[in-house]
Image: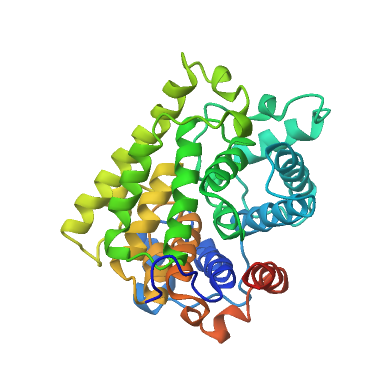
Length: 344
């Protein structure tokens, strides 16, 4: 294992590849229950990557965010105003892309339509955010934030929450995105998976009332909370409850049981985080089995599997993914280009 604090070689490439592989494996099983999936695929431990390996809006929006981060960094360090502008533009381009036809989430579509109509930056992006939505679209795409070289912990947290808030303004969406990015960062720095849930709980408790004013502006006031601290605490408290359910499930692991039964179906952000971690931590040294377990679930299978792939890639590096799988991925050239730039 990589010593803690030393970045896994090829981590960015491995995370982006694993994310897209999970997305492609879970794409055909989304909206199906487990019996229906098994009737189509046979035993879940033998699931094969589809040919062609098409991805969903999860990977498309991850690449959009990655492009926005790259564009932001050409002007200097990661900056709240510049990232909001670049990410908003990238999400609007995705919104208009004819390939945006993979059952995208309603919140992302509605928020992007409003972003498109705003006169940004004169009209603040916060007016587009859906403060009642904590869908997993907030954290399915956040992994690139964890991979940007040279960023501080505060920059990662602010950027993770801000990119979520462009579309999903519920505080739990922000907290789950922050925790997802932190998990990827920890694993890419050699953290032991056995202690990961505890470290995420500690992070949530430490950050429970920390509102990132420079990154979020007045978003809290649009959500109906009395203070910024109350807004943030509401989100981290829901994530802490999800992590507690995860910890209980891992205390008595049942690999043959649908993980969604213990940690949730993954349509909402804190459940996507918890159930993806559940699948990864059942098989931390067997990434393909982890992806297959995530794809054979009754819930939001592509989003659960894409996050599972990000965690596994961060932990194990590029060797986790066989070439005959990764070479078949849609957008493989863009994924490799982004990953290699940050790995360099």
